[in-house]
Length: 140
Image 1 (cartoon, one colour):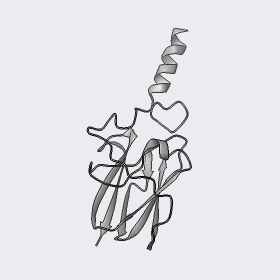
Image 2: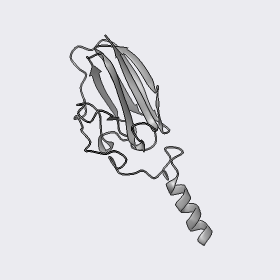
Image 3: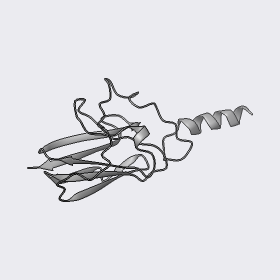
Image 4: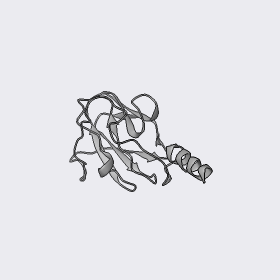
């Protein structure tokens, strides 16, 4: 019986995939400071040129690094089996989506209009620098 309890505890602590036994810290638990969240963008922006998709899947973002032109809409799709979030590393950023609004099958879009690098992460499966991380690079 003790072996079953130990096996169950080790499975719950694993973060190897998006399966139903994957344990996740609460949003913001691995991040210092408050999470700044923009409301989900449920409608397409008015002047969208290109749309680039990033998938949240199996504890990674696919593609992890994306280079786009200014004015490009980036669409994150939760193609995994569990909740994810998209947290900008910049605490003052006005984009990103929380776990409750980004369950499996959900989408979130944001148009990046200013050139620069925009690192982000899933606070449920990583930190700002390790784990489920990504970067949007916007060319001028």
